[in-house]
Length: 276
Image (cartoon, rainbow, N blue to C red; front, side, top):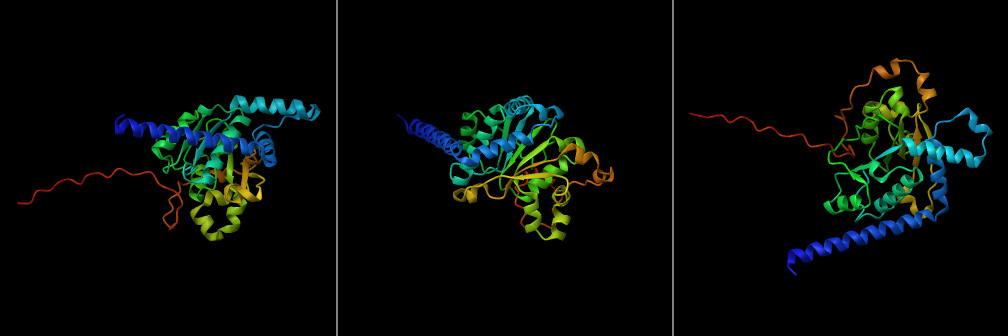
């Protein structure tokens, strides 16, 4: 066997080993009591309320909820991190797989991007059936259908960019976020800096509905301060039109610790000049 063949064989073994480890982590989380609460919160948050629900049994409501989610949701995951080397990222990936299953979201309808992904990690994600994005969107993804954004412990700029791109009542009502609690971000950030640098988060705190998700003590580093964040359309539609008119694209010129990797801007060659 040539050295190249040995290397390819070893890489394949490593991929298979990590896939098994991820699946084992999925099984571990599924057995935890807190998982059922995450699942229930997802189904409640992504199902539109209907007046007739009040006369249905709990079982009928759950079936209707799952059917609604199954028909509509897609998923985008940013900033997961290097799950081959980071245990927290591996648990977050396992939780994502559980959420996709609970929401009946096809694996291929979940797109992931992180500049930190290695070639092997991208292969593993594809092996699991997920879609790997090739372009850095900087979080600026427009929701054209109900979309679950999975943004675990991401930087504020990523949330802010996502909110900016969807800053109108129709698009925001299509957005569901599982990630850092916005009210927690507000509490930990100097008010003038939040309004100046992350104005969309600052405004969204009072527009959104947050449901805190439980976190067992042994997984504090993985799932702490996590909430399901939605934007109820009835709340958005009551706001004055001026809420949506002043919506410039975020620039972050004052931010020294941006917590986001920006996409690379092509550098144009300067024209050559001849000197006599």
